[in-house]
Amino acid sequence: MSPSRPLQVWLAAALAAGPALAAERDTVRLSAVSQVWSPEGRTVEAVTAKLDEAARDGADLVLLPQECVLTDGEPIPGPASDALAKKAAEHRMYVLVAGVIDRIERNEAILYDREGNEAGRYAKMAKTHDEMVPGDAAPVFETDFGRVAARICADEWIAELDRAYAVQGADILFTPTQSWGPDALFRDLRDVSRAIDGGFFLVEATHPSTEARHRSVIVDPAGAIVASSEYRKAGIVSAVIDLDADRPQRYLRESDPHTPGGYLPEYQPTQMPRAKNDLREAILASRRPELYKVLAPK
Image 1 (tube, rainbow, N blue to C red):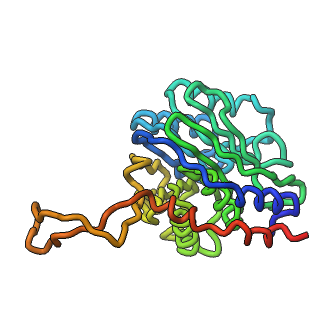
Image 2: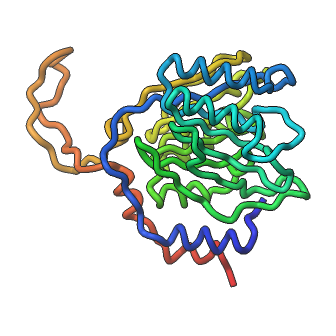
Image 3: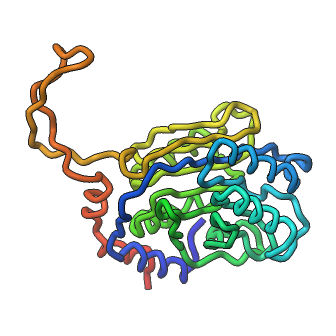
């Protein structure tokens, strides 16, 4: 599944741009809804009940699965989107929802802010049905805690998209999806590597499945799955993350004195490697943008 020519050109330009780095942030509670894929589970009432539940736990941003509300298509604003925006405002939290919401030509992710206003919209790039018009941009949205971005389902296969988000300084990449192929282990390995390469947190919301590893997950920039939904159960998976402290550091080949103490001091060294900066800074500094032209051949 290869991107269209205009998309290739845009991605090449985005990848060639200089990296963006965000300022210091506080901790944030992220939640992803694991939702039963059924008519009963995809009602507005069922989805807003999950938003209420996440709010009671103190969520700052709630990610809903792709096509979480079953509709025949309705305008935006409309009854379903209004209900989600109202919950965002009521609970003073961000809500991200995606799917074929108002027209079959577009599969979009919409971010509502703490006031219930639309804060950003992303159009799915991977063309998955004949009527669909793919998106041609990878926007990063500013929130009060950091930069966020979205991809939808089969967008997972477009590696350049994730790289473009990393170059733009995305702190968190959200993936509302129904995908897990060719199997959930493959998905986990792929997405863990994307989080490491991009230096961002990755939050994925999906539906319960009989496949043991098919879960909604939250992955940190070191590639660790820090939270996961339960097997074959609907629910909410959450994690409190520090967008600055919970990131891998780059260590130098230089050491500072260390005084052993605490647990098992006899096994501790007297020198420790010196932490220099965020590892992502080093990764992005080693980019070779001149090689990206192969993404948009003439």
